[in-house]
Length: 280
Image 1 (cartoon, rainbow, N blue to C red):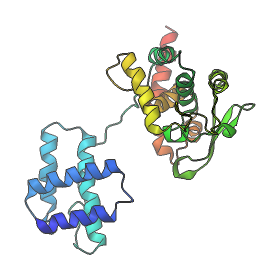
Image 2 (image 1 turned 180 degrees about the vertical axis):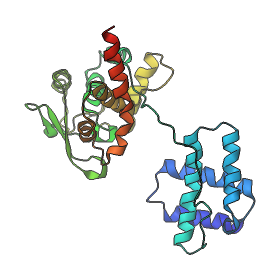
Image 3 (image 1 turned 90 degrees about the vertical axis):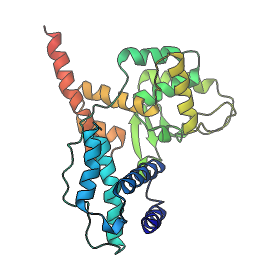
C-alpha cells in the first residue's frame, strides 16, 4: 500500500490551493477508510470494490449526502490519477448513487430571533452586528470587511467590496438597522475606518463575530450555536416566505449560480400553506 499512500499524498499536495481545509479532511478520511477496506493498490481497484464499500454505509443507514461525499472523495482522486496518466480507466465511472437529500436551510424563527435581539440589547455593538447580519444577509467574511465609507445612509444600502470571488454588490438595510448602527458608531472613540471593531479598536475578525454569537447562544441556553451563516439563512428564508422572487434573493445573497439559492424554494410552498390556513 506504500504506492497508494504516496499517490494520495501527491494528490493532496497538488490540490493544496484548490481544496479547503474541510475538503482535505473529509476526502482524506474517506480515502483512508476505502483503502483500509479494499486492501488493494489504487491501480488495482475495480468498480465492484467501490460498490461493496458504499454498500456498507447504505446498510448501516448512513444519510445519502454522507454516502455521496464518500463517493466524490474517490471520484476526485481517480480523476486526478487519470489526468496524471497513472491509470487508464476510472473505476468510479457509471455508478448509481442514492438520491441527494433535499434539505430545508436551518434558520431562526421569529421568537428565536427576538430572543437573540433581546439578549444583546445591552451591547450596542453586538446588537448592531446581529441586526446587520439579519437584515442584509451578508457573509461574515463580508461583514468584517465593511468600512464606514461603504454605507449609503440616504439609500440605506451597503457596498460589499470583497464579496465571494471578489465581486462587488450592494445590499440593503432597514430603518431599524440604520438606528442600531448609528447608536453604535456614536459611541466609538477610535479612528478605524471599519464598521465593526473589537475592544482594542482593531477590525473585528470572523472568529470574533462567531465568539459573540456563541456567547449569546450560551446565554439563551439553546444547546446549539447561532452562527453568522444561520442568520444569513434567516434573512433569505424570511424573504422567500414573503414571496420575493428567487432571482432577487440570489442577487442580495451574492450567489453566482441560482442553484445555490434554490434551497429556499421549499419555503414558498410553506408560505402558501400558511396563507391558506389563515383563511380558515
